[in-house]
Amino acid sequence: MIENQQAYIAPYVLALDVGTSSTRALLFDARGQGVTGIGSQKKYQLTTSHDGEASLDADILTEIVAATIDEVLHQMGTRASEVKAVALDTFWHSLVGVDVQNKALTPVITWEDTRPASMVQTLGEHLDEQKVHQRVGTRFHASYWPAKLTWLAREQKEVYGRVAQWISYGEYLHRMFLDKSVCSLSMASGTGMLNIRERAWDGELVQYLGIKDGQLPQLGDYKDGITGLTGAYQQRWPQLQKVTWFPALGDGAVANVGSGATTLGCWALTMGTSSAIRAIVEPEQVVPSMGLWLYLVDGKRAVVGGP
Image (cartoon, rainbow, N blue to C red; front, top):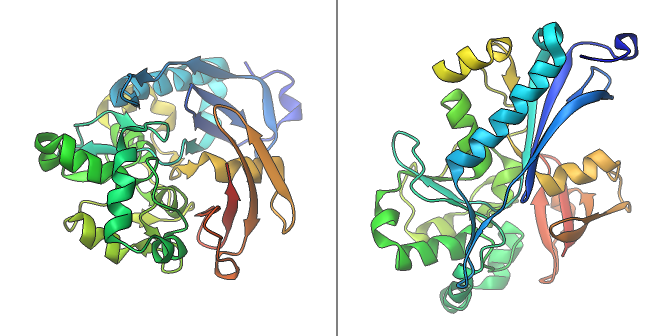
């Protein structure tokens, strides 16, 4: 139950954080104050192999996230009906291939997976990396979608050919819970496929990779929430049926926002499964050097930084 209820102001926001090694669910009140005594965290391990795999089973991970929601709603008791929004951040750079029924055909290929590293040179031989970097904010690297998709097309042709759409894990989670999703500009910018200046999928990369119409998800911004749980989850969480679920944002972006590093010249250093330093900037005012990356927080703000 919520302790010292007079200290918190309803309505509440349920916040989900899906990281590389664990997922958390926390509760915040109408002023953005964390609610003491309410929360859940569950750990898991990546599937790894000697050839560089670092992946997660999409459906197992989804059930783990769902279990944290179960715990928070149980802890809230009758006040669970006062949750009016669900916010979500996940690890950046993940890739999942789904079929027309949104069934995962691939595991969640995480940023740590190095198997696509052999494709980086191939990309560099066919595309001008510096020009691509200026448009999308990322270099060619195993973490990003161009290398991952090139590798999958070569090494897993049968699965690759069956994929109806390529999405990040945040979109997959919403499709399981809500049967629909919006890919935030923040999450899209972490794929290495988004033209940062145009806020649209990069035409040259789409053409080079042979991506068909409809194979990349619908883009939106952080405020483009969706409602309406699927049948199974509607029965599981009736308190959340009419609640707005906001698109997943990149964990690095919200790390800056959450730590208050949102003004020009204020840098945030994150130390976790990986480490990075980032500052929030206006994307139109920055052209990152080749050693840095530029991702979007939302339609107006970006984070520049490096590992």
